[in-house]
Length: 639
Image (cartoon, rainbow, N blue to C red; front, side, top):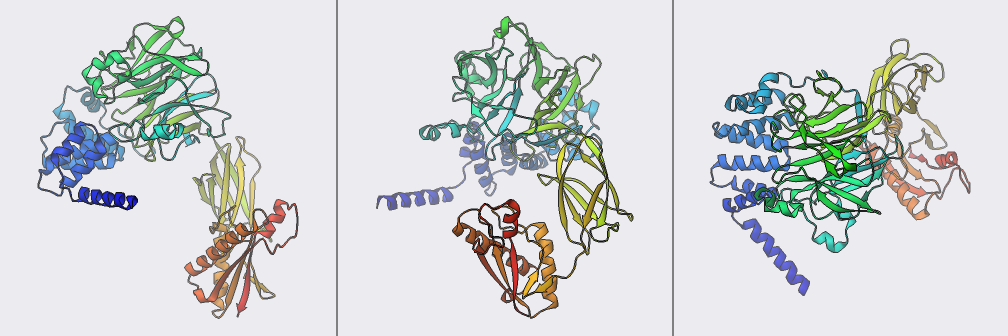
C-alpha cells in the first residue's frame, strides 16, 4: 500500500511539473546560480510563449556556451544577433569562436571582422586584424604525429590534463570520483553546478610499454582529493612534492574575496607533501593572488622552473603563460615572469609543457587555429622563433590541449574533446613505409588486375586503399610498426582478409593470392560452402561470411524450388546449454542475412545444435580442431 501511495505522488509530481507554466524569473534564477542545464531547459520552454525572443536567444546562447555545446551555442548567438545586431560586440566574438569549432571558418571570419571593428582596442581584435586570413585550409598543414586511444578513458566521464614526470608515473584528472566512494558518499557527491557532473579528482597510472594501453589507475590518497574541483597536477623531481590545481575556494583566506566566494571557475595553485602513501600538508603557493586564475602547472626536468597559466596582473588578456623560479627544493619561489608577447596574445594560452629539447608546447584558442584550443610549439632556444600550429591530426575543430611528448621514449599524450567528451589519447610520430607487391590467382598463378585492396588497422581505421594495375602490381605507403588487416576483393573471386605488420624497413614484395569463385557444390544433399566465420562468442555475420553466403543466394536463385535447413555448430568450449543457445542465434543470423537478400522465409529453416555433433571428436582440442567444429551446414530439404 505504501509503495502505491509513493508511486501515486510521484506521478502527480511529474504531471504537475509538466503542466507548470514556464517562468522567466525561474530561468533567470537558474542562470544566476550557474545551473545552466536547468536554465537552458526553462528558457527553451519560454520560446514557445510570448516573451521577447531576443533576450531568450541571448540567454540560451550563453547557457550552451557555458555547457560547451558549440553547435547550439553558435545557433543561438546567430539568432540573437539577427534579432538585434546592436548587441555587445562580445557576442560576435563568441559566435566566431563556436563557428570555428564547427569548422565554419569563413563564417567565423565575417563574425570576427564585426567584432574587431567594434572593439578596435581589444588585444584579440588586434591579433585578428594581423592574421585574419590565416584560418586552416584542408591539407595545408599535415601533422607529423598521429593519435590513438590510450586505454585510460571512461566512456561516461571526462579524463584529461595528464602530466608526465621523469618516471613511468602519469597523473591525470577525471570526474569518475563516485567509483571510489562508498554508497553513502555517492548520495552526497559534490557536483559542478553549471553542468551537474561530479567534481574532478587527481588519479595516477603507470606506463608499462609504448604499446600497452593504460588500463589500471588509482585515486591519489590523502588530503589532496577533497570535495573540490581538482585540476592538473605535476610532480616535483624529488617525488615528495606535488603542485596541483584546485578551486580557490579551497583556501580559507581567499573566501573573503567576492569572486572566490561565488565558486565560478576560479582556480589556484597548491602544493602537497608525500607522507608515506598519502599526500598531506596542502598549501597555496605563495605568489598566488586571490581573485585571479592560476592553473595547469608544469615543472621542468631539472626542477628549476614552474610554468603555469594565469590572468594575474600583467597579463595581456585571457590566460597568459608564466613561469616562476623554484627555490629551496620546491618549497620557495622567486618572482613570476610572463613569457611575453612572442607567446601570449589577447586570447587564452594554457597547458604549458617544455620538452627535453626545450620546445615549449602549449594550447591556445587564438584566431587562425582549427577551432577551440589548438596545440602550438615554439623553440625556446631560438630568440626569433614563432609559435607553430601542430597541424591536422593533433588539432581538430574541437578543443585539443595538454600535449606532452617524450622524444627519448618516442611517444606522448594529448587531451581532446574531439568525440564529444574529454579523453586522453596516445601520440606517436608518423612513420611510413612503402609496400610493394602483386596479387595472383591462387590456382593458375596469373597476375590479377583491378583487385581492390583496403588496409585497416585493428580499430578499423582505413590506412590505405588502392587497386592493382594491369600487371597485378600495387604500391602503397603505410604507417610503420603498425598491425593491419588487408581486405582483398575482386569480382568473380572469393573475398579474402589477411593480417600482417608493417616494419620500419622496406621488405620483400608482398605476394597476395585469391581463389576464383565456383558455384557451390552439392554433395549428398548438402550444399558445400567455405566456412561462415563468426567472432568469438558472437552471432554477427562478418564480411567474409556475407561474401560466402552471397554464393548460396545465387544458387538458390537458380533453383527457386530449393528449401534448405541451416545447421549451426559450435566447438566444445563452454557449457553445452550456452553453446546450443549461441549456435541457434548464429543459425538465425545466417537465415536473416538470406532473408535480407530476398530469399523467402518459407524456403529456409534454422537449427542450432551447439557442440553435440562435432566434426572432429577430441578431448583437449587444438585451435585447429575447434575451428573445424565451429561450422555451418546447409542441408537440402527440397530441390
